[in-house]
Amino acid sequence: MRSTPRPGAVSSTVRRGLVAAAVLALGSTAAVATATSASAAVSCKVNYSASEWQGGMSANLTIQNLGDALNGWTLTFSFPNSSQKVSQGWSGNWSQSGSNVTVTAMDWNKSLATGGSTSIGFNGTWSGSNPAPSDFKINGVSCNGTPQSPSPSPSVSPSVSPSASPSPRVSPSASPSPRVSPSASPSPSASPSTSPPPPGTHVDNPYADATGYVNPDWSASAKSEPGGSRVANISTAIWLDRIAAISSGSAGNNSMGLRDHLDEAVRQDEANGSAPLTIQVVIYDLPNRDCSALASNGELKIAQDGLARYKSEYIDVIAGIMADSKYSNLRIVTVIEPDSLPNLITNVSNFQACQEAQSSGAYVQGVQYALNKLHAIKNVYTYVDAAHHAWLGWDNNFQPMVNLFYQVATGTTAGVNSIDGFIVNTANFAALTEPYFNINTTVNGQSVRQSHWVDWNWYVDESSFATGLRNALISKGFPNTIGMLVDTSRNGWGGSARPTKASTSTDVNTFVNESRVDRRIHAGNWCNQSGAGMGERPKANPAAGFDAYVWIKPPGESDGSSSAIDNDEGKGFDRMCDPTYTGNSLNGNNMSGALGGAPVSGHWFSAQFQQLMQNAYPPLS
Ligand code: BGC
Image (cartoon, rainbow, N blue to C red):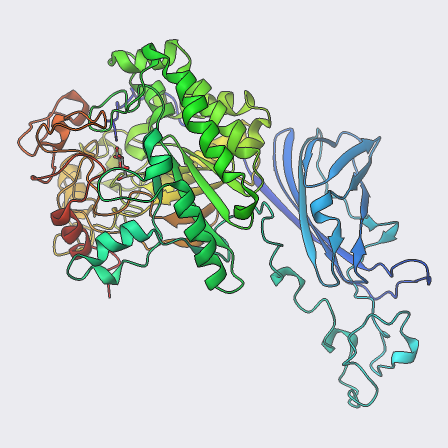
């Protein structure tokens, strides 16, 4: 995989999203809920936070139950401004009459234990101003954030409690000190936000508080290498790179099929205690796959009914397995079709296979079909591939890509909600962060954008690219719940060649070349890059807007063979994987920078694995 980028001409400025965050947390004023013997004593708190842009908003509400356990709830509130409208809500049944909004619980979140919480949200519109609502009620009772409690007075006495639900540990004898107050008591509200959602709930970030699935196949390959046990327990993705991989495992050294992996994931989950488990599966078999390169060409061809086969023999089978109820507690992350939609933006005019992918609609329809099937499974998460900064970071590519993502999403059954997020740098080598310069750095009056390396791109690394892309996608109409992933499996760039400070050169090219940690010959080089190292270890919530750093490309698996090798996987020989190749216009006619001696893509490449460990950054301990 990994086609080369095609820099666009520099014209207009990249449109950035206007995202204003407004957070309203209701204050807690003392109040004692009234209760009758017939109904639960209701006490609640609602946190409301919204991102807004001109005319639009996306809001999240967290309902905390501070009273008796609820089995069924209705939330009401009113918008202060009559122009504010809910256009689409989630995790509840939403309706609006005038300014009054009513949300009733879904089956799966109607039970709220004492101290429990649930998150719901909506996308909406407004004009004029967009003030936050504040009159939240659950089952008709105002949510003012106070636990249903014994008494607001410092002398706690169970006799004044309106119900029996406060903790039994609160008793006169246990609280002789006047310092004991309701808030200091072991009340149910002590940490409602830390209670994990029930297993199988579709959460905003599937990586949060979760452990990652360790692929036994990859782990065994890693362990077979000297020093490999240092990384062998890191979570890496499963690649379903052909129909046969669903049942019998993938290419190369891999032996397990999808069910084998999910069964093993259930086993790891159960052995793990209470933390949920996240398993990552790459969906990678579109017809005319890897249309602008050869190394990862696949088995299906558009001209041979490939789209129909993709749907019925590939996606339907995968979705059928993932929907099995025995896997419903797992968080299954899918990475959807690396490189495919980006190829439609940049490579249609030069590559016949991409042209066919576009004119037939096969890529768009294939991705939409996958999204429809996978999003429909509650515990499956969808992340669509968005290439990397040195592919899409130019004006001519960036906004058209955002528009295409939006068009693809709005053509699915659930619209923009069928996508949980986007992933950048899948199987690529671009640095997460360039520590010694950024896009605004100038050298002797010249912008780093003028250097050969940056070449008028608007981004110098994946962190800034993913952030810019997310903002633009939200501006375009995606909800602000979308989160970004970065594949950091091979973008570490440590070792002795890593610069340790900014260059002092006053020549912009020398400055950038001496300062950059990405040591590739050209940022368009993508195959088995010499000098690369393992990058950041997988990590949830690493920065605002990012769901996780992840290892999608399993380190040690080749990107493509360095010379032609016969194989039955449809893989071709791409000269970008040949270390003697002197390049083409797509990589500025530079050397390929590929390591020699590489096997076919997906197969184990020991020498590369060793170098990736050696040059890991952060270094391996
Ligand atoms: C290959 C796949 C392989 C994946 C992960 C891709 O480049 O085409 O066959 O499963 O990399 O190594």
